[in-house]
Length: 335
Image 1 (tube, rainbow, N blue to C red):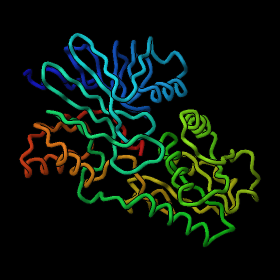
Image 2: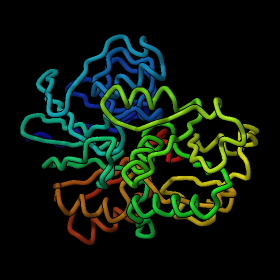
Image 3: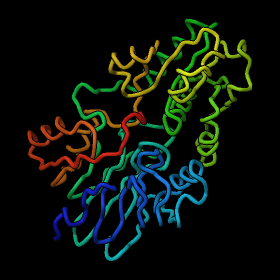
Image 4: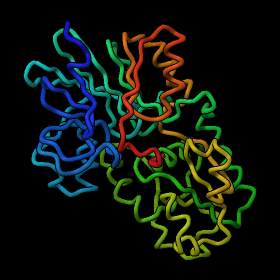
């Protein structure tokens, strides 16, 4: 069996697979790339050839234009392609629509690059699939024991209760445009909220893309088409950055909420002036990270980015060999 460090190598551009001469989620243009999901810190334009799920390729085309790469290779979950003896298969990661783990098999060795992932139920994407492996390459965005997120359904109930208590106020929710916004909408529908939801223009095309892939979001309408009076009592979604711009002034006495795993840090919520912090994350929290490692029991754990130290210590205490790769360029503010 070959050594894992000869199959995947951390480089400034990203994780490089020398036997197949390709990168996983490179942060600069390369000849060949496998992309785990559509968030901009993992999916960048300008590569020569890109392999990814059809959903991720569609997201990249929507964001960057149809010519975002020299060529593309759509891979369904469970489908394998081979390059120079290296087999690469994509498996669901549970992060956002089309998100995938990349399983790399070479000469009897299996390495799984998780990309970003979560283990919680999400009606807008396929759930995380545990893949037996010798090496599991994990993120650690919320890799501290303090990060234990409540059920998303509990946070949605808090949002609906706040709306009911102040029917004359607009309810303005900041949520990342890809994945988080659509998940919130779907969770609101499952909680019984059937009224139209207003959306910022930056969300409209991605909402339509989700619908094309069969994710039902219910009645939506653009904020731009509603009067100030009509926005009272309506739940509106926008990218978090829009909440601090003049765009916010169109809402009558807005009740401001932000949905993010970072809303569990009270200082962050206060700094942003968030009235209703909603702890809803599309990343694995501490319990999900450690439960995944305990379930998989890989021979080695590699940590790409995030809070590596606590997870390294957990691995040490549980007899798992681990190393921190200290990859740069993967922006946690996407939360």
